[in-house]
Image (cartoon, rainbow, N blue to C red; front, side, top):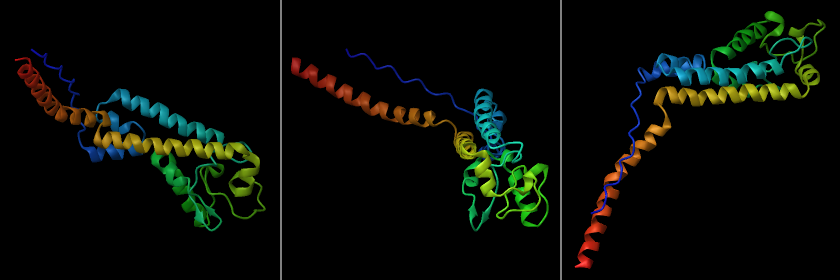
Length: 203
């Protein structure tokens, strides 16, 4: 008599609570949506890894001469289309000050905090302050760290998109386990038919 194959372990059901609220919280701050769902281990993991990557990128894109965090800014002016910001905004709240600074600069006001996340000038300014640096100044003075800081902050934003998906829809592994459970009865039926044929042949 053929032994019955062991059933695959059933993955525990995860209470996602309100997926929309969890997704919004996960976008505002990495891991916050998972804390809302009481998935504390993942919340801490995303908070430390994703936010740490973003902060490190901001550190690389900062200097005393250029000012703090010059690699994260919003600008779609002619000659300065800042496409990386579309990825950086995935980190949520930490990248939102760039929108406030851009609004001030485009309204003719002075940026705050020595140009923190403020869009650079397109043309040279007579005032020698970090907030008045141009795109060329940033590339020249920060050198390779300008690109490295941009890449790190972009990666953090894109990684948080995956964390948002996890908060809204749950772990992907649960879906694959479910599909395996559906295929199991068909495999068992095929094995029984094969066993029956073998018994008939023996007779």
